[in-house]
Amino acid sequence: MKKLAILTGGGDCPGLNAVIRAVVKSAHQNRIEVIGIRDGFRGAVEEDYKLLGIPDVSGILPRGGTILGTTNRDNPFAYPTLIDGKLESVDRSDQVISQLQGLGVEALLAIGGDGSLSIALEFDKKGLSVIGIPKTIDNDLMATDLTFGFQTAVSTAQDALDRLHSTAESHHRVMILEVMGRYAGWIALYAGVAGGADVILIPEIPYELSKVAAAVKKRADSGKKFSIIVVAEGAKPLGGEMVVERNLPGRIDPVKLGGIGAKLGEDLEILTGMETRVTVLGHLQRGGSPNAADRVLATRYGVAAVEAAIDGDFGTMVALQGQKIVRVPLTEAVNKLKKVSLEEPVLHVARKLGIMMGD
Image (cartoon, rainbow, N blue to C red; front, top):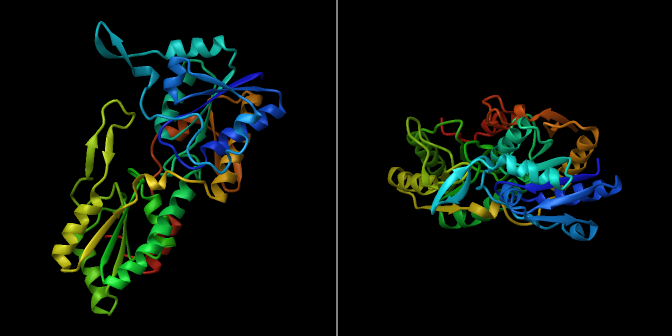
């Protein structure tokens, strides 16, 4: 193994630079060159590369974002290309493979969530040597206990809840915090438990509005004149639909969720008569410096990915299972989303604490 390429695809998250740093430093130890591909798979198509050396990764461990840039658009298998004045989707995957092989790249390390790793899997099927590294604040990738970025996102949400508690108690309000997570409720569940929420609403458990309102009024009647509610962006009422902010054509996942917090706030204010305020964390959950846990996990993933490349164990993703970093087939990672099971231990803890889950 003499040369690797690395890219960061999909949404940004804390820990991406920690992975890049670990890959470059461990590759350097094995006299392997690392080619950085800028802006995800767009750079792979457009030949936007950079040779990464030790000076390039010096000091980036605590930095949020990614020094390579990223995008959740520009799938090489359906790449927007101008033909005769019209923008059409063209399969340019063969071009990507040819270009990387021309550079002498022997393996591509793809850092991403389910969308980016699904693309990586398609490249693997076409003969490109690929190794996946699991990244998403949503923690919704199968075959791994944790994705890096998740723990920092939870800490950010928990800090917001700590701050909302004081203002909620002072003004006797219902405070709703809307968090990310797409179709999985991991961030809402973990942040809600860590931040002392009274109600947690997640996509996996459709909520009954009347029961949520009753729980809020019960607290008020018992002398607790405020309530803290955490709602995942993908949560929905029983028999209802998720709230979609807008559709974004050209993205790997064109549906942009958002707005459930405002809808829930309006509904609860009518039913309870209590003043309700909504905070949407949005991209604050993606930004900033990774916490210690994510720095360590991201670094372990980076080193493990280089080791997998040296071993020629392609078509795999490095994953955390228990305390060990293992290699799993990419097909196991992207075949479906990892959602919160009704048997999830933290969900069990939430119920035992008396946290209302909407059902």
